[in-house]
Image (cartoon, rainbow, N blue to C red; front, side, top):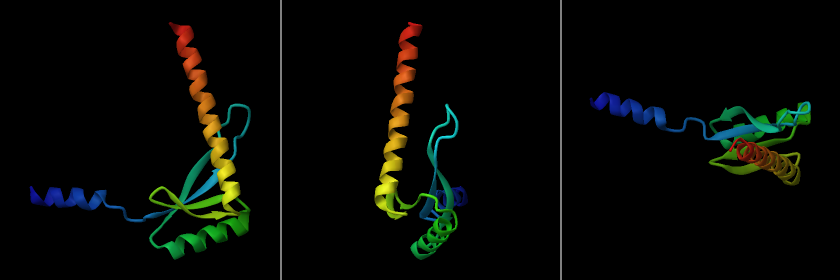
Length: 106
């Protein structure tokens, strides 16, 4: 019984605390913009180095996150903020459309 508890504890620990997210803009009329987690890293140096390489190669908008906080933004923090604002507006529109649809169904 004790072995199962230890196994559960080990599986619930964070193994790679740094995540690299890449912005994907909306494609098509009904497409939704979103952040995709493309990579996880064990150290901050690895995460920053890899994010910088990805950005230099693709010119993508990238953010490095640890525990929900942005540690680094490529090309800059303002661009990442604009993407997050666009994502929030899209989510708000979806919720408003769902609310209107629910009202018409009553």
